[in-house]
Amino acid sequence: MTHYSHPHDILKIVAAHNGDIALVIVTDISGGTLRARGALMAVTPDADFGYISAGCVDGDIIFQARAALVDGAARELVYGEGSPFKDITLPCGGTIKLRIIPGPDRDVIKAAVADLDARQSTVLKISDLVQTYKPKLRLRIVGRGAPFAALARLAGASGFEIYGQSPDADMWQDYFTGFDHLTDPASPPPLIDDVWTAAVFLFHDHDWEPALLSQALSGDAFYIGAMGSDQTHRARLESLRAMGAKNIGRIKGPIGLLPAMRDAGLLAVSILAEIIDAAQTQELLP
Image 1 (cartoon, one colour):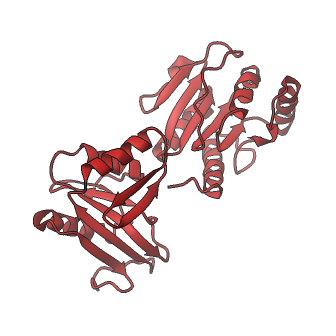
Image 2 (cartoon, one colour):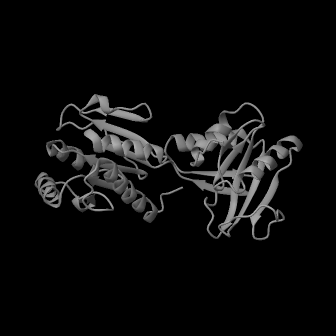
Image 3 (tube, rainbow, N blue to C red):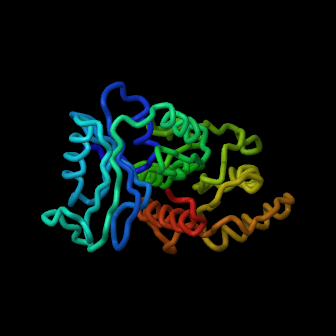
């Protein structure tokens, strides 16, 4: 099993697969289930991708999906309260309803993938099912040093797309979706932020910040944060105000859900928690 979480990943697998494949869609939930309505799995005769539970029902879902591939019939399944599968329980006490669709329409799937590739939301319509999916959250990390590296690793492992920008070319990693080598504090690269992007500035040498932060404030990022103490943040805002920057109150500082983290790894956890909290508040999570 590969533990893909985001619908974009599952839909790309279905779109690219040339053989038999079934798409599993969560159609309803109640109680303390792990996944949300609309969560996806894909199952082939010899592989499976994604997950619906913490392991308590996924084995049976895979079995049922492979049976659907054999007979070509869609299946409606219920696990938990009201389920006919009395020997398969949900320890959380919730209910999961799902549909297994063998051989889903590839053109429909490919159209959804194209929307998500373009970082646009998409409406997936398969039979009578209609589900809206949002692009992955993207984290644009601007800075250098250990905090940059720690946040990139953690956010990448958490399913974010990572776009890096740094004066240090060696900060690039192969899992980044893009990287800009910064060479002039006064000349930022083109702005890429959309409403699903969080922009985080991790500089100790704050001379790099003014033009980059001013540019970010002109964009659509749902979160903008910058590292530094209260004193540093006050000076930062004064500098931006003197430049004529607008909406400087959008910048979170000091950054992070937990104050005064003096370790790069813990700071990364604190920053990512604050970003996820902002995304949840703004209903941007998948």
